Image (cartoon, rainbow, N blue to C red; front, side, top):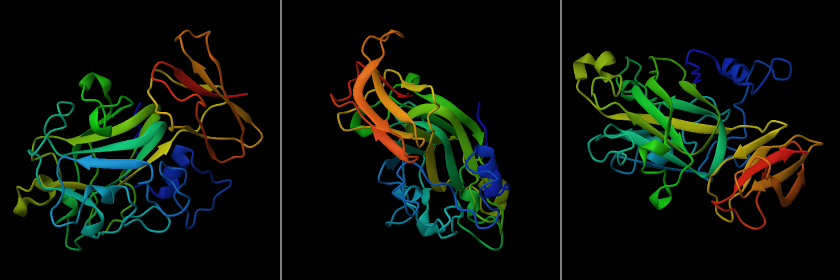
Length: 313
Protein backbone atom coordinates (compact mmCIF):
# COMPACT_ATOMS: atom_id res chain seq x y z
CA UNK A 1 0.00 0.00 0.00
CA UNK A 2 1.26 3.47 -0.87
CA UNK A 3 0.78 6.37 1.52
CA UNK A 4 1.36 9.92 0.34
CA UNK A 5 1.58 12.70 2.90
CA UNK A 6 0.72 15.95 1.19
CA UNK A 7 2.58 19.21 1.42
CA UNK A 8 -0.05 21.06 3.46
CA UNK A 9 0.70 18.81 6.45
CA UNK A 10 3.42 20.11 8.76
CA UNK A 11 6.67 18.30 9.40
CA UNK A 12 5.40 17.46 12.87
CA UNK A 13 2.40 15.77 11.29
CA UNK A 14 4.66 13.91 8.85
CA UNK A 15 6.95 12.63 11.60
CA UNK A 16 4.03 11.47 13.72
CA UNK A 17 2.48 9.57 10.82
CA UNK A 18 5.72 7.88 9.84
CA UNK A 19 6.63 6.94 13.39
CA UNK A 20 9.79 9.02 13.32
CA UNK A 21 8.76 10.97 16.41
CA UNK A 22 6.07 11.08 19.06
CA UNK A 23 4.56 13.88 21.10
CA UNK A 24 5.87 12.13 24.18
CA UNK A 25 9.55 12.72 23.45
CA UNK A 26 9.83 15.58 20.95
CA UNK A 27 8.58 19.13 21.31
CA UNK A 28 6.43 20.78 18.66
CA UNK A 29 8.69 23.77 18.10
CA UNK A 30 11.76 23.75 15.87
CA UNK A 31 11.71 19.99 15.25
CA UNK A 32 14.47 18.78 12.96
CA UNK A 33 13.87 16.19 10.27
CA UNK A 34 14.90 12.68 11.37
CA UNK A 35 18.41 11.47 10.71
CA UNK A 36 19.37 7.97 9.62
CA UNK A 37 18.65 8.54 5.93
CA UNK A 38 20.68 6.69 3.31
CA UNK A 39 24.01 8.51 2.99
CA UNK A 40 23.71 10.25 6.37
CA UNK A 41 27.19 11.19 7.61
CA UNK A 42 25.89 12.63 10.87
CA UNK A 43 25.67 16.29 9.87
CA UNK A 44 24.03 18.21 7.07
CA UNK A 45 21.62 16.66 4.56
CA UNK A 46 23.94 15.53 1.77
CA UNK A 47 23.30 11.89 0.80
CA UNK A 48 25.91 11.56 -1.97
CA UNK A 49 28.13 9.30 0.16
CA UNK A 50 25.70 6.43 -0.58
CA UNK A 51 23.38 7.70 -3.34
CA UNK A 52 24.15 8.40 -7.01
CA UNK A 53 21.90 9.92 -9.65
CA UNK A 54 21.55 10.09 -13.42
CA UNK A 55 18.92 11.66 -15.68
CA UNK A 56 17.69 11.74 -19.24
CA UNK A 57 18.53 15.44 -19.40
CA UNK A 58 19.55 18.33 -17.19
CA UNK A 59 19.92 22.08 -17.51
CA UNK A 60 22.88 23.53 -19.36
CA UNK A 61 25.55 25.87 -18.00
CA UNK A 62 26.44 23.97 -14.83
CA UNK A 63 23.27 24.80 -12.91
CA UNK A 64 20.02 22.99 -12.04
CA UNK A 65 21.74 19.61 -12.23
CA UNK A 66 20.56 16.18 -11.07
CA UNK A 67 23.21 16.06 -8.33
CA UNK A 68 21.44 18.99 -6.67
CA UNK A 69 18.58 16.66 -5.71
CA UNK A 70 20.78 14.61 -3.36
CA UNK A 71 23.56 16.90 -2.14
CA UNK A 72 21.50 18.83 0.41
CA UNK A 73 21.90 22.11 -1.47
CA UNK A 74 19.04 24.44 -0.61
CA UNK A 75 17.84 22.49 2.45
CA UNK A 76 17.68 24.45 5.70
CA UNK A 77 19.62 23.43 8.81
CA UNK A 78 16.63 21.56 10.23
CA UNK A 79 16.39 19.41 7.10
CA UNK A 80 12.77 20.32 6.46
CA UNK A 81 12.47 23.32 4.14
CA UNK A 82 13.99 23.82 0.68
CA UNK A 83 14.85 27.27 -0.61
CA UNK A 84 13.47 28.77 -3.84
CA UNK A 85 16.80 29.33 -5.59
CA UNK A 86 16.81 27.60 -9.00
CA UNK A 87 20.56 26.94 -8.64
CA UNK A 88 19.89 24.33 -5.92
CA UNK A 89 17.52 22.03 -7.81
CA UNK A 90 17.26 19.93 -10.99
CA UNK A 91 15.52 20.98 -14.20
CA UNK A 92 15.21 18.86 -17.34
CA UNK A 93 14.75 20.75 -20.61
CA UNK A 94 14.28 17.83 -22.99
CA UNK A 95 12.18 14.73 -22.53
CA UNK A 96 12.73 13.22 -25.97
CA UNK A 97 16.53 12.96 -25.70
CA UNK A 98 16.61 9.42 -24.25
CA UNK A 99 14.07 7.21 -22.56
CA UNK A 100 15.02 4.89 -19.70
CA UNK A 101 15.93 2.03 -22.04
CA UNK A 102 12.47 0.54 -22.28
CA UNK A 103 11.77 0.39 -18.55
CA UNK A 104 9.82 3.66 -18.59
CA UNK A 105 9.89 4.82 -22.21
CA UNK A 106 9.56 8.53 -22.88
CA UNK A 107 9.07 11.42 -20.48
CA UNK A 108 11.57 13.14 -18.21
CA UNK A 109 13.28 10.62 -15.94
CA UNK A 110 15.65 10.58 -12.98
CA UNK A 111 17.20 7.44 -11.47
CA UNK A 112 18.79 6.98 -8.05
CA UNK A 113 21.28 4.22 -7.19
CA UNK A 114 22.28 3.23 -3.64
CA UNK A 115 25.58 1.76 -2.51
CA UNK A 116 23.76 -1.45 -1.53
CA UNK A 117 20.26 -2.90 -1.21
CA UNK A 118 18.19 -1.25 1.52
CA UNK A 119 14.78 -2.02 2.95
CA UNK A 120 13.12 1.35 2.35
CA UNK A 121 10.70 2.94 4.77
CA UNK A 122 9.95 5.99 2.67
CA UNK A 123 11.16 8.52 0.15
CA UNK A 124 10.86 12.24 0.89
CA UNK A 125 10.33 14.44 -2.16
CA UNK A 126 10.58 18.20 -2.53
CA UNK A 127 9.08 19.10 -5.92
CA UNK A 128 10.52 21.91 -8.01
CA UNK A 129 10.48 24.88 -5.65
CA UNK A 130 11.76 27.86 -7.63
CA UNK A 131 9.74 30.83 -6.41
CA UNK A 132 7.95 33.85 -7.84
CA UNK A 133 5.98 36.11 -5.47
CA UNK A 134 3.50 36.80 -8.26
CA UNK A 135 2.29 33.26 -8.79
CA UNK A 136 3.22 29.84 -10.15
CA UNK A 137 5.65 31.17 -12.77
CA UNK A 138 8.36 28.64 -11.95
CA UNK A 139 7.09 26.17 -9.34
CA UNK A 140 4.63 24.97 -12.01
CA UNK A 141 7.63 23.28 -13.63
CA UNK A 142 7.46 20.70 -10.84
CA UNK A 143 6.80 17.10 -11.84
CA UNK A 144 3.11 16.25 -12.05
CA UNK A 145 2.00 12.88 -13.47
CA UNK A 146 4.75 10.41 -12.62
CA UNK A 147 5.52 6.74 -12.16
CA UNK A 148 7.93 5.73 -9.40
CA UNK A 149 9.52 2.28 -9.63
CA UNK A 150 12.18 0.39 -7.71
CA UNK A 151 14.33 -2.69 -8.15
CA UNK A 152 17.15 -4.52 -6.40
CA UNK A 153 18.43 -6.03 -9.64
CA UNK A 154 21.61 -4.68 -11.18
CA UNK A 155 21.94 -3.59 -14.79
CA UNK A 156 24.96 -2.39 -16.78
CA UNK A 157 27.15 0.47 -15.65
CA UNK A 158 26.17 0.44 -11.99
CA UNK A 159 22.51 1.24 -12.63
CA UNK A 160 19.25 -0.67 -12.41
CA UNK A 161 18.11 -3.56 -14.59
CA UNK A 162 17.13 -2.99 -18.21
CA UNK A 163 14.34 -5.55 -17.92
CA UNK A 164 10.92 -4.02 -17.22
CA UNK A 165 9.92 -7.19 -15.36
CA UNK A 166 12.55 -6.52 -12.68
CA UNK A 167 10.92 -3.24 -11.63
CA UNK A 168 7.99 -2.75 -9.24
CA UNK A 169 5.74 0.32 -9.40
CA UNK A 170 5.31 1.89 -5.96
CA UNK A 171 3.41 4.99 -7.12
CA UNK A 172 1.63 6.22 -10.25
CA UNK A 173 -0.27 9.51 -10.25
CA UNK A 174 0.05 13.25 -9.68
CA UNK A 175 2.61 14.81 -7.37
CA UNK A 176 1.81 18.10 -5.70
CA UNK A 177 2.79 21.62 -6.77
CA UNK A 178 4.02 24.38 -4.46
CA UNK A 179 1.50 27.19 -4.15
CA UNK A 180 2.69 30.83 -4.20
CA UNK A 181 4.10 31.81 -0.82
CA UNK A 182 3.91 28.30 0.60
CA UNK A 183 6.86 27.00 2.68
CA UNK A 184 8.79 24.40 0.71
CA UNK A 185 8.41 21.47 3.11
CA UNK A 186 8.31 17.98 1.53
CA UNK A 187 5.59 17.85 -1.09
CA UNK A 188 5.26 14.06 -0.87
CA UNK A 189 6.43 11.18 1.26
CA UNK A 190 6.14 7.87 -0.57
CA UNK A 191 5.86 4.84 1.70
CA UNK A 192 7.79 1.73 0.58
CA UNK A 193 6.81 -0.53 3.46
CA UNK A 194 10.24 -2.13 3.82
CA UNK A 195 10.62 -3.11 0.15
CA UNK A 196 14.22 -4.08 -0.76
CA UNK A 197 15.59 -1.59 -3.28
CA UNK A 198 18.90 -0.56 -4.74
CA UNK A 199 17.55 1.65 -7.53
CA UNK A 200 14.59 4.05 -7.68
CA UNK A 201 13.32 5.56 -10.93
CA UNK A 202 10.94 8.49 -11.42
CA UNK A 203 9.49 9.02 -14.90
CA UNK A 204 6.97 11.61 -16.03
CA UNK A 205 4.11 11.30 -18.44
CA UNK A 206 4.91 11.94 -22.12
CA UNK A 207 1.91 14.29 -22.36
CA UNK A 208 3.16 17.88 -22.15
CA UNK A 209 -0.11 18.94 -20.51
CA UNK A 210 0.40 16.60 -17.54
CA UNK A 211 4.18 16.03 -17.20
CA UNK A 212 4.32 19.25 -15.16
CA UNK A 213 1.85 21.83 -13.80
CA UNK A 214 2.44 24.51 -16.43
CA UNK A 215 -0.72 23.82 -18.45
CA UNK A 216 -2.86 24.34 -15.35
CA UNK A 217 -1.07 27.23 -13.66
CA UNK A 218 0.76 29.16 -16.40
CA UNK A 219 -1.80 29.42 -19.17
CA UNK A 220 -0.22 32.59 -20.60
CA UNK A 221 3.17 30.90 -20.98
CA UNK A 222 2.13 27.49 -22.28
CA UNK A 223 3.48 25.22 -23.63
CA UNK A 224 6.58 24.69 -21.51
CA UNK A 225 7.63 21.09 -20.91
CA UNK A 226 10.67 21.89 -18.69
CA UNK A 227 10.26 19.80 -15.54
CA UNK A 228 12.27 19.17 -12.39
CA UNK A 229 12.68 18.35 -8.70
CA UNK A 230 14.39 20.07 -5.79
CA UNK A 231 15.46 17.27 -3.46
CA UNK A 232 14.85 13.65 -2.48
CA UNK A 233 15.82 11.73 0.65
CA UNK A 234 15.53 8.00 1.36
CA UNK A 235 14.99 6.43 4.79
CA UNK A 236 15.73 2.72 5.39
CA UNK A 237 13.63 0.47 7.58
CA UNK A 238 14.65 -0.59 11.08
CA UNK A 239 14.61 -4.38 11.39
CA UNK A 240 11.96 -6.18 13.41
CA UNK A 241 13.02 -8.49 16.27
CA UNK A 242 12.37 -11.50 14.03
CA UNK A 243 14.45 -11.46 10.87
CA UNK A 244 14.75 -9.58 7.62
CA UNK A 245 15.58 -11.74 4.59
CA UNK A 246 17.07 -10.19 1.48
CA UNK A 247 16.26 -13.01 -0.89
CA UNK A 248 18.24 -13.67 -4.04
CA UNK A 249 19.95 -10.29 -4.09
CA UNK A 250 23.52 -9.81 -5.23
CA UNK A 251 26.15 -8.07 -3.10
CA UNK A 252 29.83 -7.51 -3.68
CA UNK A 253 32.54 -8.38 -1.19
CA UNK A 254 32.63 -4.96 0.46
CA UNK A 255 28.90 -4.22 0.67
CA UNK A 256 27.28 -4.53 4.09
CA UNK A 257 23.71 -4.80 5.31
CA UNK A 258 22.68 -1.69 7.24
CA UNK A 259 20.16 -1.84 10.07
CA UNK A 260 18.95 0.10 13.08
CA UNK A 261 20.14 -1.69 16.22
CA UNK A 262 18.60 -1.69 19.69
CA UNK A 263 20.83 -1.23 22.72
CA UNK A 264 21.17 -4.46 24.68
CA UNK A 265 20.25 -6.72 21.73
CA UNK A 266 22.58 -9.08 19.89
CA UNK A 267 22.37 -9.60 16.13
CA UNK A 268 23.58 -12.44 13.96
CA UNK A 269 24.18 -12.45 10.21
CA UNK A 270 22.82 -15.64 8.64
CA UNK A 271 23.06 -17.03 5.13
CA UNK A 272 21.22 -19.65 3.14
CA UNK A 273 22.97 -21.37 0.23
CA UNK A 274 20.10 -23.65 -0.88
CA UNK A 275 16.97 -21.54 -0.73
CA UNK A 276 15.29 -24.03 1.62
CA UNK A 277 13.65 -22.43 4.66
CA UNK A 278 15.35 -24.94 6.98
CA UNK A 279 18.88 -24.19 5.77
CA UNK A 280 19.68 -20.86 7.41
CA UNK A 281 23.12 -20.93 9.05
CA UNK A 282 25.38 -18.42 10.86
CA UNK A 283 27.61 -16.48 8.47
CA UNK A 284 30.23 -15.92 11.15
CA UNK A 285 29.42 -12.44 12.46
CA UNK A 286 27.57 -11.24 15.56
CA UNK A 287 27.22 -7.70 16.90
CA UNK A 288 25.93 -6.25 20.16
CA UNK A 289 23.50 -3.44 19.43
CA UNK A 290 24.14 0.02 20.86
CA UNK A 291 21.12 1.88 19.50
CA UNK A 292 22.95 3.18 16.44
CA UNK A 293 22.72 2.28 12.76
CA UNK A 294 25.07 -0.68 12.35
CA UNK A 295 26.43 -2.75 9.47
CA UNK A 296 27.19 -6.44 8.98
CA UNK A 297 28.72 -8.39 6.12
CA UNK A 298 29.65 -11.96 5.33
CA UNK A 299 33.35 -12.45 6.22
CA UNK A 300 33.58 -14.87 3.28
CA UNK A 301 32.17 -12.28 0.87
CA UNK A 302 28.65 -11.91 -0.44
CA UNK A 303 27.52 -14.19 -3.23
CA UNK A 304 24.64 -13.94 -5.70
CA UNK A 305 24.04 -17.65 -4.95
CA UNK A 306 23.27 -17.01 -1.28
CA UNK A 307 20.44 -15.39 0.62
CA UNK A 308 21.15 -13.24 3.68
CA UNK A 309 19.28 -12.00 6.72
CA UNK A 310 20.03 -10.30 10.00
CA UNK A 311 18.41 -11.91 13.01
CA UNK A 312 18.00 -10.52 16.51
CA UNK A 313 19.01 -13.24 18.97
